[in-house]
Amino acid sequence: MGQLTIPGETGQVSDGYHTFDELYAHRCRLFIALMQLLPKVSWWSRRHHDGNMPQGWVVAGLHLPTGDVTYHLPEADVPLLRVAQVRESETAPPWDGHSSQDVLDRLERWLDLRGQGMPRETQDNEGERS
Image (cartoon, rainbow, N blue to C red; front, top):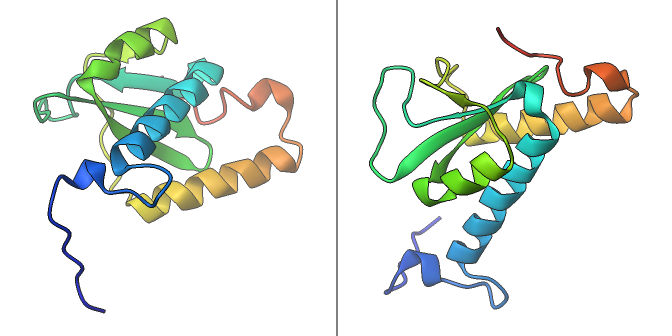
């Protein structure tokens, strides 16, 4: 398959309904909302496990029973993480090597587990790390 090149700012590319920037903002807000609902397994940090972090970004994640789910979020979203009372960690846990596809698979398997009646009291703490 060939490569499509569109001149202009990537974030302003639209499908006719939303720009990439709008969709990315939606993803960030939805992830923070999910983290707020699962406080025992949610975290964020200004540094990766090795202490590094690209300027202007933080990393946030969930320790789910199906595996870790992480995203980089714009540093501008830190106030939202604080409002959501997501726990801040000194550094992120070591990355397990997951890909974007792994994240989708882990979320889908987690949704399947919840749909199969995972006990309510373990829904937000199963997979929790100390």
